[in-house]
Length: 70
Image (tube, rainbow, N blue to C red; front, side, top):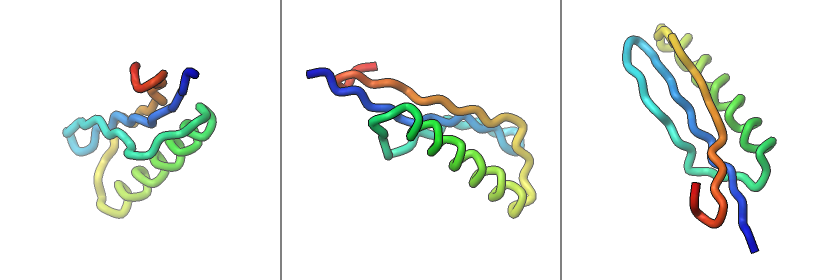
C-alpha cells in the first residue's frame, strides 16, 4: 500500500536574511497542507509587522512524500 503525505515548506527573506522553514506537521491531503501554509504565511506577516521587520520574499509549497521518499 502506498502512503502519501504532504509536508509544508516555506522560504522567507526578512531583513536581508533568507531561510527555509519546514513544518514538523504533515498532512494526508494537499488541500490541508496548502491551508496550513497560508495560515503560517499570514502569521509570519503579522509577526513581521509587530517586530517592525520587512519581508521581501515569502513562498511556500507542499512537498509530496510517497512511502517516506520524495
